[in-house]
Image 1 (cartoon, rainbow, N blue to C red):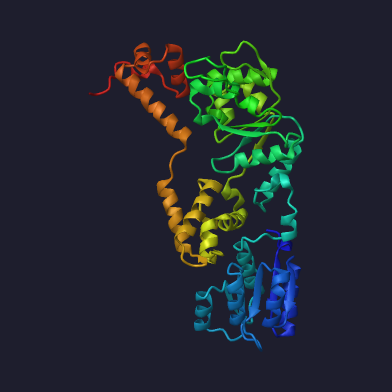
Image 2: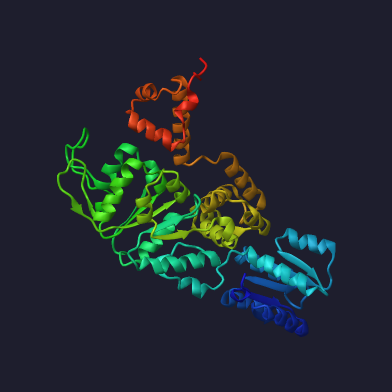
Length: 457
């Protein structure tokens, strides 16, 4: 973590110690301002906007705990480390119970001080440079990060955006694939056009062609009017195909033709319509493995996969957790209404150490639940830990995963009932044999394994 991006205020009425602290912190790259009294610290905090305050406990005039109380009232999430030559266990207990981040007794070890400073800055969740934050390019607004991995990814995305190449985004569920796709759209020459997002796992197989290409009036039962498909809706803009790995094989060849020929033919129509659309696709599945296993067309794979961008998981960018958590917190109406200002230090530590299988989406849910239950201005660790447990216990499977599991169990049961007789199983399922075989292939089910093994009744 780069120290030069952080601002530290040091407060002490001992000029020699003030110089020593300033030198040690400046030497490792922090931006330091040194003030000799609590009163001056209060006056300078609004303009310097520190990420951390280190103050002596015993000073003439305003002492360290009084200064802490004043800071805590206006900026409860700003961490404060107390230094004192008069340390005692009761003083330490009192300070930490009131919310002081750290407590060091003089003479202190420099390494101990730097470790506490690093730990405090790690959980602040504040933007490191507010002028830089306000100058973030419009195209990437909404992407909250200080992670080198994410910055590298955004650099790639910015370069790719100016081209017309199809982009494939790979990442775990909840990492923000659609957010990145929108950023690419905003940075592209198509920014004035529409950005249309569609989740392929949520479309029934029989409706893909109508949804993507549209249909003519009267083309099928229920088609009471002409319908423009997604390609026409995204004309001149970007079409984002999420969970492309769940697109049925029967439609993949039609999509390939539309991309290659830049035309679509609505269902029931006798003519084709030219379209100008950029395709960005994404999935949490291993598309290369799907291709090798026959579950995804190779020609479509290479057409979509011109440029690949990999989004890191949340645990690969843990340094973003404080930023994201505080961003979510300050965007919630409940937090504003209840006066919730931030997270207690141990609560942020809990967020930082969590496994996050649901990535950024799960983090949003945990913060929202914590805000809903808190009765204090700083969210305590107990509420964060409770929300994390609830998320782990109640996490619902993704729609695509649930549907895939149901299909497999349904097909398995049919094959058991019919002892692997595909014709009979297809009739029961009201599918023709070709479609039924495709489903069996999709779920890697071999009918011969069910011969002579009827289900118990």
